Amino acid sequence: MGKALDGVRILDFTHVQSGPTCTQLLAWFGADVIKVERAGAGDITREQLRDIPDVDSLYFTMLNHNKRSVTIDTKNPEGKLVLEALIQKCDVLVENFAPGALDRMGFTWERIQELNPRMIVASVKGFGPGPYEDCKVYENVAQCAGGAASTTGFDDGPPVVSGAQIGDSGTGLHLALGIVTALYQRTMTGRGQRVLAAMQDGVLNLCRVKLRDQQRLERTGTMKEYPQYPNGTFGEAVPRAGNASGGGQPGWILKCKGWETDPNAYIYFITQAPVWTKICNVIGKEEWATDPDYATPAARLPHLKDIFAEIERWTMTKTKFEAMEILNKYDIPCGPILSMKEIAEEPSLRKTGTIVEVDHPTRGKYLTVGNPIKLSDSPTEVTRSPLLGEHTDEVMAELGYSVEQISALRMAGAI
Ligand code: CAO
Image: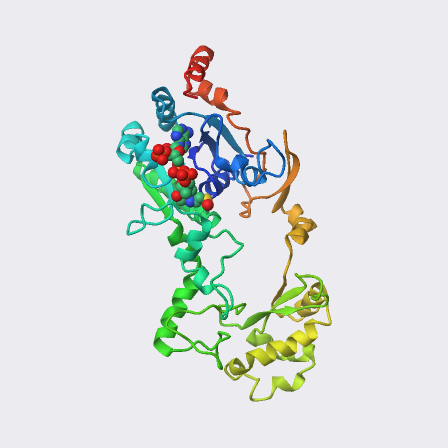
């Protein structure tokens, strides 16, 4: 069966996490992704956070599945010629170098267009045009500059970054959408274009509810679903909301049986308005269903702390899974706090390909996250990440280089 992006060739100049997430997605959808790395070193993540000496790290392998690896020194004049040949052959160049690095290599947008006017050039940068456009950026910088950190954590603590890599993997997702959109537009215009996903913009896009709240706060001076209401105070900016839901249905994380020893014996509980009577019945507070202080969402807002404390008295008598089972019967929205260990061992995630076991020639078997986007006509098969330069000869031969030319270029340090 063919794949959605069969025939699309990606010149993958990405490294670390944000760019590689994007090109891995495109590879999973069937694009031929040719990752360009420096001979001898390669993507820096190959050697970062290693758990086995001299073996590509999980950091690298889990971001570079289904790709081919070629080594080219793009600052070497002969290496530049190889890169030019690749630009002429590929549809998309994806890069997440520090600002200006591609230009310094000699591959400006104008030069790339001369070589291939159909080429789409897609970039991740930390910031868009403006005061910080020249800055180098990593995940947590983007989380801080995109508004996520100031709105995450508890009111009495410092800003907190999230375990979800919304700056890197989140921006990679945004970039992938930009690329397929540009490919679609190219089918009509015949022209390539530049695609930019700035990490600050990507994080802010994912934090839009907090920009919503900033404006609500400025207009009304308060936000009743925040834990600061009714007894705390609000300042000028959206405060940290702990585990409040961020939506119109109040929620909180509550202890379950075993919380004293298990750091993940918790459940997220949402007091969704349509199931309020069922909640009251389940926790044994039937009178709250008709009590005017509790019967309506507006009446409940000043009592949320007490309400969650009462619900917690009930959840603490059940494991998170027992609570889930009971609550789901009544359509009460809730979710167990799952540890990474529980997720790794969850059979249903293995069955859907969301968690995949992959075999690697030097590492052996390991678990990875499969494609979270499932296309019915383009199923994803996750194949291992390439060794450094594993496909250099193969790709060079496809570009028309002879065995002798390849070995001369290798001797010259160009590949
Ligand atoms: N051949 C020759 N030179 C190469 C090459 C190759 N195959 N691949 C890369 N290089 C060179 C680049 O041209 C650059 O050289 P100059 O500095 O002389 O122009 C150099 O390698 C280093 O590139 P870099 O500045 O991108 O790398 P860094 O490790 O210093 O910075 C990072 C890393 C991530 C901070 C920076 O790339 C960046 O800000 N990227 C944009 C934002 C981003 O994607 N951040 C997410 C990273 S994941 O957390």
